[in-house]
Image (cartoon, rainbow, N blue to C red; front, side, top):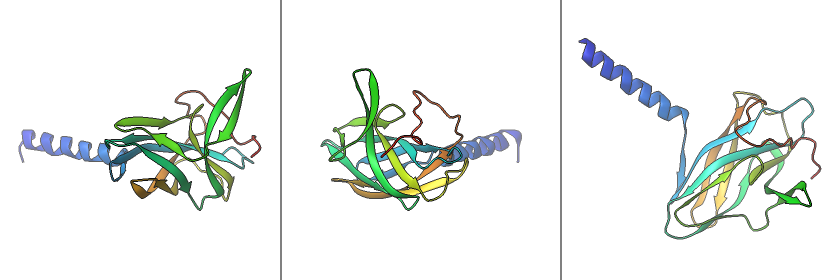
Amino acid sequence: MNIRKLAVVAALGLCAAGSAWAKDYKVGQIEVDDLWVRASAPGQANGAGYMDIDNDAKTPDRLLSVVSNAAERVELHTVQTENGVSKMRQVEGGIALPADTEVKLSPGGYHVMFIKLKAPFKDGDTVPATLKFEKAGEVAVQFKVKPASHNPGMSHDHGAMKH
């Protein structure tokens, strides 16, 4: 095999490895990616999950719920600031996904709350879950567990909050 062909084969291999690293999930016109949770601190009872949801449909949809055997209960939450104090609140009725829009679940905003973890989230592991959408249906996903130090934005420690 000549050098040029070898370079092409190597480049294709890197592209394939890169796309396998950034796993996307799709159900109907909904695409979900960048699913992650932080590794649990010692004694931490709860954990928060984050993701990007892209609704490519011409009609709105809604993330109704998330189910996972990794915790006793899983809820959709948001952070609201009242009188300078940030408080976590369960989102009643799910998270709206406007047509042709991306919604980010991220620290300091919407997130998936894993309540009473059955086992700590360990760096490098994955957390299985099923997302339930109002119109698109259900999709099985895996949240990647990232180091506790992972901080893509605003940080909130959900382990000490009461639910």
